Image 1 (cartoon, one colour):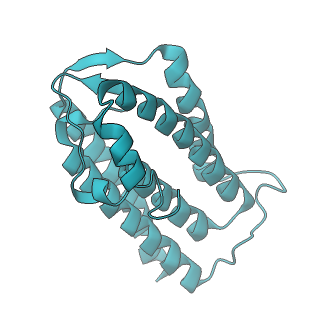
Image 2: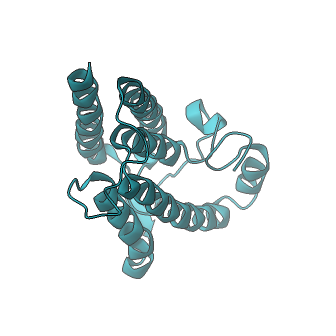
Image 3: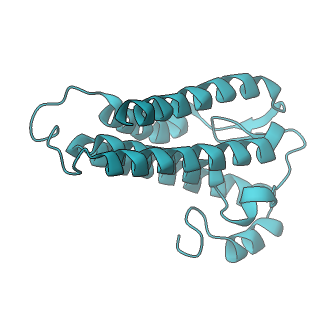
Length: 189
């Protein structure tokens, strides 16, 4: 069972990478793009967090096991990762051509409020954080929890950048959306 859950977890991440690369070819033209320093403000913490989450050879105390590596923890971690992948793919499909890896505003950009965007304003980040949480539960070491936290900080920076951009371009509709739908966790944040 342990080998199967590990393969499923790895497959989730590979599916995400493949879908992201293919779907990145099908986006609208960019009308407004963030500056390099602005992009680095969120990319550096996300990159550092991914390194902490996925790099397997950390010294003590980063390699201390804080979640026991049991069949149950591996199943839970894998299930959370799969749930996160499905939510992320649903959000990416719903966003369609409006998606970008950077904070951008597209030509003919639409404010999407359907599908997972009815549940949270930034469902791709919600799904990715669930995938990271599942991975952290599966591996269960100190560095995984720190990596998850740092990735969360990077996403929070990016969310704030995106929100400022969307408020500028949708000054009437976006504040209403902000009042009606939470940013990252339904009914909480």
